[in-house]
Image 1 (cartoon, one colour):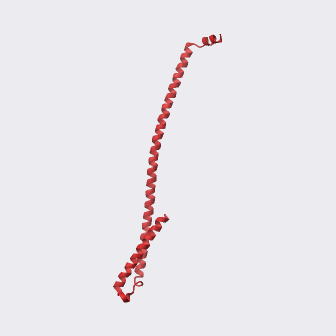
Image 2 (spheres, rainbow, N blue to C red; image 1 turned 180 degrees about the vertical axis):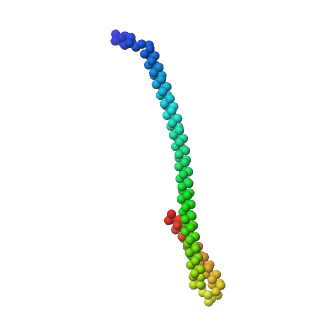
Image 3 (spheres, rainbow, N blue to C red; image 1 turned 60 degrees about the horizontal axis):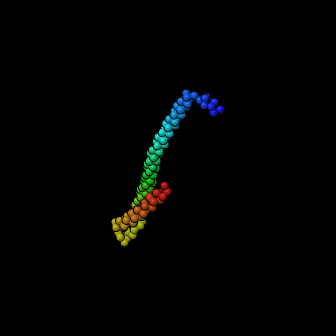
Length: 133
């Protein structure tokens, strides 16, 4: 009898309202799932773009950093070469035997010796500078 009373209390309008409400909730849930799916797809695309941007940024940063090292090394090496050239010209007459070779050939031999020393010191300074940075 309790079942008959329960059935009697449920009207067709109530059932219709409940069905309409369920359909509305299902539609709302479906829309939310579509929106979430679009958001996930957009986030995935965005993360790919961000990854590409970060990679490009890192590569640019590395190029700038390495270029700075090379330029710094070249400047240090050039300064070292100028210092050594100045020292070589100042000591030109000290390194050769003027009595055996004569004044001009002795100067030429001295310049060759100093040039070799300058190149070695310049390369050493360049390598030292690059390692420092």
